[in-house]
Amino acid sequence: WNLNKKIIDPIAPRYTCVDQFRIPVTMAGVDAVTRQTVTLHKKTADIGTKPLVYGPKLFLEEQDVVLLSEGEEVTLLDWGNAIVKTITKDASGKPTAVAMELHLEGDFKTTKQKLSWLADVPENVPVMLYEFDHLITERNIDKQTDLDKVVREVTEYKLEAVAEEGIKQVKKGDIIQFQRRGFFICDAVEPVATFFYIPDGHLKHNHLSAMARWGPPPPTLDERKERAEAEAKKQKQTAASEPPSGRRPSPTSS
Image (cartoon, rainbow, N blue to C red; front, side, top):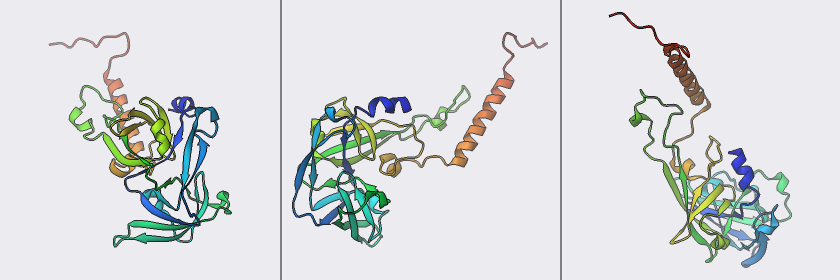
């Protein structure tokens, strides 16, 4: 996984999207929608450019908003700092809207939350994000393994999302990075732009991922230890039951 990342990280254009559970935000201190041309990759400028849109209305990820507090100063990536003025919630306590005030004088080094965001503009593009789990739940299987018990019933998870307008230049087969989500490969551009997540080898799910929202929870440290011990015990028993290399088991008398 590390080698894979080393290869694609320097060449993957960066884009932003927010999923179907996005929260609307009103931003005080911003009067109109503006656009700025920025590079697709801060460290590899020759990859190309895209328009970055700012505006008084934007979206944040729900999974980020639940971590915020009123009065908190946060950093909006590729923009600057803002102060959370109010968080509106429904009867169940779920956030439904956020009011913020731009504070570009703030220091990003002092903020805990560094958030991806997307301006709420008509040019945004619908996309589908797919993630796939392992088909087999066990690391090692043998002839005695009951396959019905180790084959995962659900392996596909998806999220609907909207992405910035620059995503229109992505072609099928292109590898990109959705900011704070990870690397994806474009599987289709029509009728809806579709992206498959490229695993990074981490056991813990990204809190913005489809796996974190829909999938089974990752194993705890104790569960991983128990599984490793069980596999080691099984391998030891298998090795003990096999004859030494180069020798055949002695024939049994009838």
